[in-house]
Amino acid sequence: MLLHIENVLDAATIARIRAKLDAAEWIDGRETVGPQGAQVKRNQQLPDASPLRTELGREVLAACARHPQFHAATLPVKILPPRFNRYSGGGTYGAHVDGAVMALADGDQLRSDIACTVFLADPESYDGGELIVDDTYGEHEVKLPAGDAIVYTAGSLHRVEAVTRGTRVAAFFWIQSLVRDDAQRRTLLQLDTAIRQLTNGGADADAIRQLTGVYHNLLRQWAET
Picture 1 (cartoon, rainbow, N blue to C red):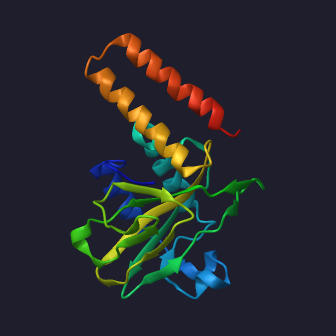
Picture 2 (cartoon, rainbow, N blue to C red; picture 1 turned 45 degrees about the vertical axis):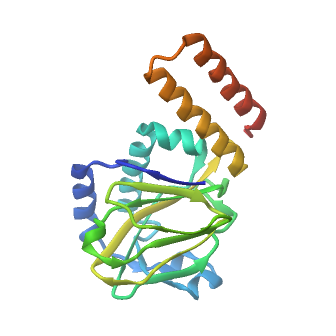
């Protein structure tokens, strides 16, 4: 699944986050990946222990939680707190696949089913920086307006093209979903979307209840807790 979620963050929130990030101290992004990732990663990140990362990460996750499409698409059970990166001066991240299991701060572990990037820079402000996701349907180029998010299967091969002008800034994080299988999550999202559209369109209430029952019975069958 590759899903564009619009308006996760509003303009005022983006401006406030960017002001804090622009004044922050950044480190070499290779410090947060293993030896294979370090060979192809050329960017900067906020330090994992940075209080600013914690503060802004909570704000990003709160905005995601308020967005109904985000919840419907991801069905989150665990989320790795967001990190923040920036690319400039030729910064890039070569083709890679995210780690399957990631450690949480409390010692628990997360299975990375879904990756999410929330864009924090207007696409007109930088050249390059496209997120390229390679899945079973080919390569997809993603470069979204500030405040929009992309969610995609974490097991997909993906890369970030070199930024040749300006600065690309984003938040990124991983999600363990109640539903491990990508095709099943996509089916549930399609059902959820259809139910919302039928409800808003004033469709027959009995039919909507039946369809809602199908949704929850499938979720009950597929969910892992």
